[in-house]
Image (cartoon, rainbow, N blue to C red; front, side, top):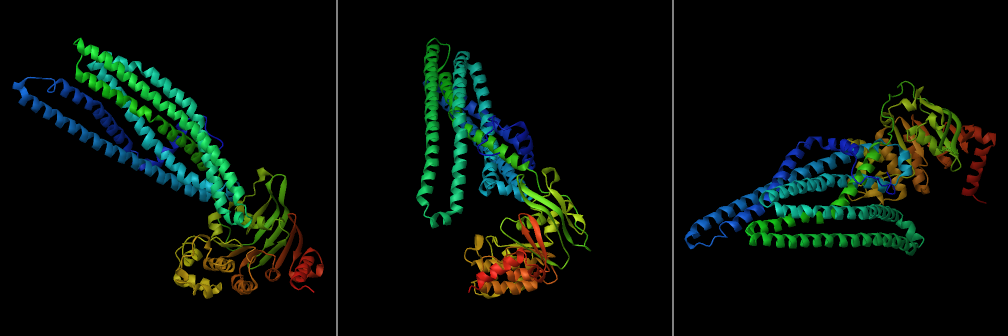
Length: 598
């Protein structure tokens, strides 16, 4: 669910609650206990004014000098009862708050765990269409909003409802006239609530949408700040951000204006109710039909009755956030996952075959057209061709990042040893291969952790991989060598050093199949020479598919496939293709002329 698509209902659906509540099943028993404590707390709040009524109408109302000691004892007893009730209220409030928060945080913990696992099972195509920042917001922020539904809105609503029932019941017992006056104000309160709801709901929804747009825009600008600065685009981006901010400010001011009308409306209603109670109650006291204590307790009940309603704006905002969050969280949890079932190809035959494969990302733009080739065990196959010819798509399909789905117009089959890739356990399959691209991602951690991807590997194995990948020279110069923390994305390292680490990572996993996607691009000649030596080690006896423009990398391949517009135009080794004098030969001659101009 996107930020632009907000739910029609302003309360989480029964389906959302049914699916989310079991995530906190280990603390589910806390809820009834917390509700009992809330009921106890509400009962104490209702009883406290009655204790004051007894004190005012009892020992404080008597004026007999001979009964001073007795009045003092009665007042002390009522004071002790008042303190005892306050203690009960404090304990009940503390325990109910702790239990509800424990329940809510358990829900957040398990929901984040489920979403984290879900994200790992989503196909790469999902992230092609959805910003990373948006997904992070779902996992972090939306889970908290759902927790607040139970810990704030639900708990407060139950407590307030019980207190309202208790107030009306006690007033009906002690003074039916005063209880009738309070009950008479209920239609006015309901009208105020409905009025506020009808006008605030659209504003709160727009507020959520605008905040999401601001967050997404700010995140995008931070990621591309280097590009913005390099082209001097700061002023333009500032103006765009000011426009979004101004729009959010206008909406916020409308909301503030509405709240500013709503709260004084309640204040006026409360004062009117107090004035009416004071007048009617005073008259009743004069006529001898009521007491001062009853009037005072009734005035206190007005405050207890109106106070929660004045907090409606804040709770209503939480309710809307929780509603939107629950819909968006469930939308992610319901996304179609990568295939989780499957078996591994036979170990005795690892031949990779593409059989008349046609693939497209969008129906009107085919990327591969009837592509057929094979990669034998121990064989290196190179893919060459212009940008957009389909080379990287072949690698992505073999990784299982995208699936051949016949119902979407794809054709052909990809098999490993005759076993369909679509019926393969993708996680187990990926553990048998290593993927090296020109864009190495380094996590925040040590070099050793980045090479091993946090898996348990011996120090000797990691050091051997670093040595074989020609990383030892620069790693040994770092303050803590392989235990040096490189930071997110490894900005402290050069492009060539990061690329060498990608080969060290591949060597550490000792793969059966190696996939190189422009792994030697964007490096200097010195690093290229090091990588060539690393490739001698890495490709020795391994099955490999290489996407590369550099001739030195392509020449070593047993077979070269030349692609153009998604089709294989030429196939053969370097010598054969040069003798044919076709597209590959032209590409080689063009590259040589560029490297050795007259």
